[in-house]
View 1 (cartoon, one colour):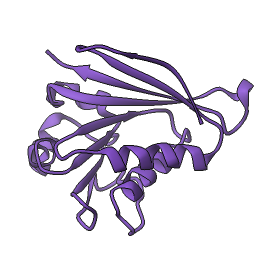
View 2: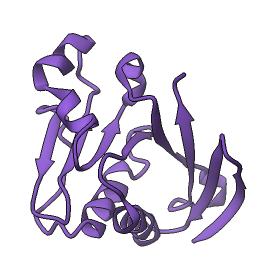
View 3: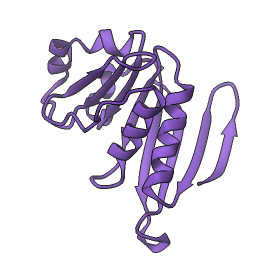
View 4: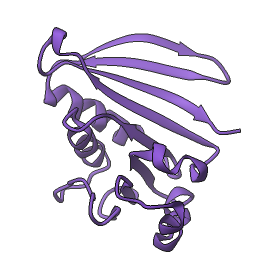
Length: 158
């Protein structure tokens, strides 16, 4: 795992990490889980098959969650409470509109005492919290089948 362009100031932080195996992508997620604080929100962006689930499984492991973690594509949200804090894993790919998120009670998760990770968050941008971290996972087949470029950025909606 290599870390590239890392810029930081009061307003903006961006980190680019290159991974070369599923294990390295898992380890990065694990680091996020270990460092996570209650109330943090991460969005997860990436095409199908880039490793979003492997990354998420690493986050869960870093939080101390031992039960199987899969994408909640058909349930919208999966809540794990066995770790050191609750883990709210959203997959909003099948959301028709933000009213469905209100029915789920998303505010309790987004503004709760756990870590929130939202896949396909671009579909619900209007309800994202004021501050969150965006994780973008990209492939580059020219650099190898298992290569991933993972960008983590501080985002502000105001």
